[in-house]
Length: 609
Image (cartoon, rainbow, N blue to C red; front, side, top):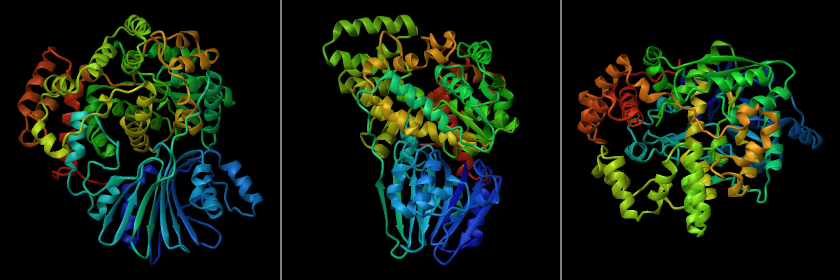
């Protein structure tokens, strides 16, 4: 993993300043290229070919192409063999050099040959253009903006702000975050004038005319008729691909089926024991310590554990807000931050993580809401009744039943319930002025398959991946996500609904596919514990409560146009008194206020050091 930076005019001082902001993304090496047309910068985290031959910006033999690359191409060795056979010569054993020669050979069509995660910029001197590209599902971020002098891009928003971009908040993004829990769902960021290149897209900038075009290069191709056996084969191959590294590999182990499956497959791939890193919550219903310990008996792993302590949370808070760069809807991102900090303390550099498994395989209980609607719309009412009963029995929740009722209700009833019961603290007049009649896209009546595609492209995976990237890179760690291998995703999207949700259980096909690799206690799990922080409990700690009262009771908070501060103050009082559980809503608002203080109210610094 690395930090990449650049712009379309010469300025050695400014590109050095951008590299300083992104330094913790790549502390092993730094480099720049400045000529009459572009300035490129790179901060390297050395993972493959640790020698100086991996230095970037990297050029081809005649220096007609230059590259800055953040990510990994897992099939680079196969592509390298193909390119050597075609007459290309290599000076290093890096995957980055394969990108250069693949572009020489196939142009931008090379993207479809890559299996991996990436955000990169190619400076094509002959064609006088700059090509920016992002991987299929947005595992690696890439931001850009325009100034009077041309295009600016970076792995980090903070580096773009070195050019004066993003000087005002994007109120539309703020309101969609508050009202609909939407982030990273389109090209907008929370900073006006700074955009995110969408997953599966590329941007081509003409250095002579200043024209740019953005186009989609990847469209999901579901592998219809896929089976549990196909899923197992794709998943095992994905984990094996992600063992390509010249440094040791570990795992983020939650105790759930996804991370446990990664651990089991990795155990079969590696010759030596390896470390796992986990968040535990002693005494909480969300604690999965016993499943982590079960995996320790099952595989050759050394388990390392951390937890969330109120005093540490308060100490971390400012650094976390700065590292994430944009507000986050839940404290699961902070839980990740703590796990990656633990790994950093153990000098880890590469971790495999289960991100995406629940989203592509319908692992969350709310997907049953869509399942119920699908059965209802197809007049399969006996099966609907059976599924509703089984979900209540296995999951011990009525949330999907309430969601189904919400989906089945007329539009005006849904809107009224949302406005009066779910989000009465929003300034709805300001929301309408800012966002028009926009609504949460998850309100749409849709099948399970349609909801999974929506999750993949907009409502969940894009922001989860950005949080993952920023939490891991804050601690100079490369996080790899086997569930978001293109073969795994396209196979999963080809499964039938009954292979995903059936008899009150989630992820049916994956459990069947992995059963013989997992301890029985984990393979047989029917419950679902999301990877979350204990927000409600944490927010009742005396020290944390004092921080919340200061923020929610402050004059700047009351003056923001986004919410009704008096209602939020009452909500905080009710939460602290135990009359309601409002931690998630309070976090969204407090996080947003702290973000304003850090990035716009003059209290913070944009330094990445």
